[in-house]
Image: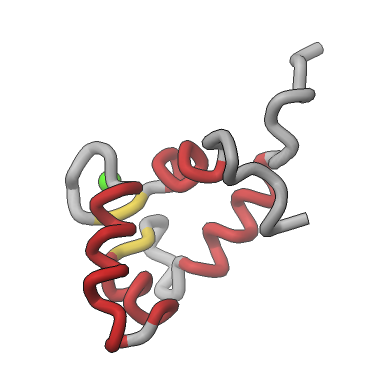
Amino acid sequence: MMDHSRFEMDDDKISLAFKHLDYDDSGFIDRDEILKLFGKDNEEVCDYIVDLVDTDKDGKISFAEFKALMCQEGFESKEFQ
Ligand SMILES: [Ca+2]
């Protein structure tokens, strides 16, 4: 038994949210897809988010990076429950 009391988000919910953002089904969320989400007027916000989430700096957000974001304290469960 794992202790899930700390992280309310389960893999299914995270996976669903990730697939929702991965428009071209590439397995990664890239800057263009973030840009679609926030709109062309918010390029600075997009760059900030990609920079924040893209921890290995390959220019795209992997599921592992996305999951790390979702599991951060203060970001858990509220948005997707
Ligand atoms: Ca990355």
